[in-house]
Length: 372
Image (cartoon, rainbow, N blue to C red; front, side):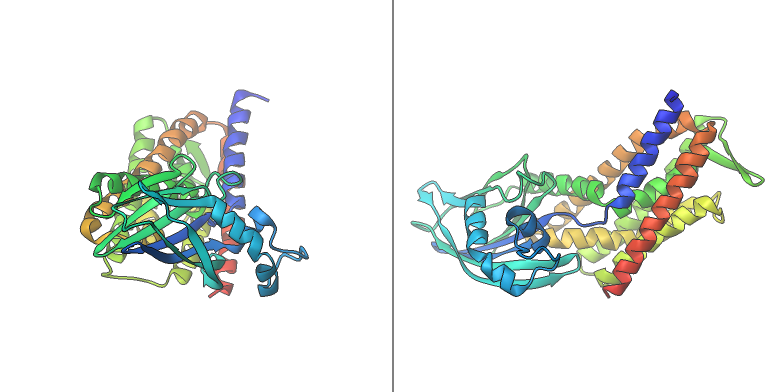
């Protein structure tokens, strides 16, 4: 196979791989409150993640029942105890599991473990070592919200940052900025629907429509202007609604938002196959970017915005989304510009890729609409 053919196949496989995935990040939500020397809180973990870790579905029928969850509770408690250690400079603060409940979220059912524990004395700094699921899923994130009196702070645990030390007297704003910046980048990179919407709009940017045919643009400048228009419109739009939602000025229910996001991917794919919006794809990017912003806001709401650094954290998360987005564009644009004159690019990447993306987006939309 020629070099051009290999590159086209790589691009198609990337689109297929993205289309095969839903937007189901592996996140667990840990909330701890410190009152004097006492700790209490809860830990929410997706049932699908617990199944991957310890095999909760005893009969293998794909449906985890309450009885199966209860039967697996000893193994689950052992998993949690080995996955989280909390300590101070005076020693460990052992946690125990007091109850097990089930909570429904948009992306599935979660086990809700209520926690309690104590330290030898009221801590000034709390050290946490979080290891849940890192050995089987490197994309997993543990999202912590820590309350200590009037102070609320957040932290995100990942395989690269499994240990954190948090002062209960003050929070480093720049540490929080770095956390939110990383999570903004992480969210766009795992947000398959966001990425496919943007990429599907970018694929025709290196082409022009002549009659009923796509042909390659003659100069890079032409493609760059189109790319800048699409990316800028998408950025401005989702930044507006992300900010409005994060600051509680305007909120939408996340379930219909996720369905509309899937519809936006479908329409972008269909527009590549039967072009209606050709010279002004930035209008599609802006219009649907407003809805994608509410999707980003949903992810940010899981992190929370610390009261003492709300604007800084919002800015950092949004900047992270933009950096992640620009990284995708920087990788994609040189490749598609190089391939723009090739018939394989138009047939295999643009058309066949758009068919696969559109089919996946239609499935996501139906799945999300039925869950409303």
